Length: 99
Image 1: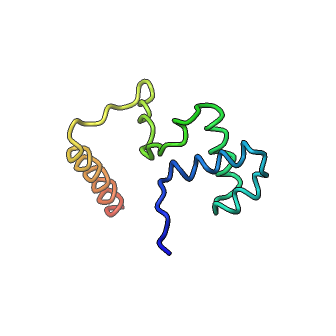
Image 2: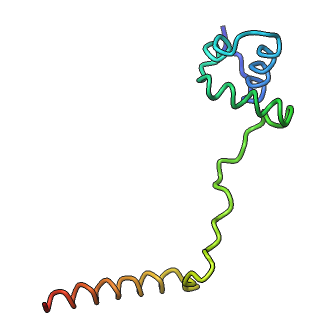
């Protein structure tokens, strides 16, 4: 018998439908092979955002943090920053060697 192909969205929709039918979270999570924590997370997202919450979400990190006010500005070229840091480390190392 061939495997039944289904998308992640269809699986999540079936998961939520069983919960809406009144099945226990523990039983549904066990049948779908997810932790209860993940099950509650999916169900809460569904309750908050509807069907669009069941689609895949981006795993990309959020917005980069802004530097603190008054923080030193990094050079435009990352290589320049590395070279400067290496030079400072080399200076510290050689100044300690002469002690």
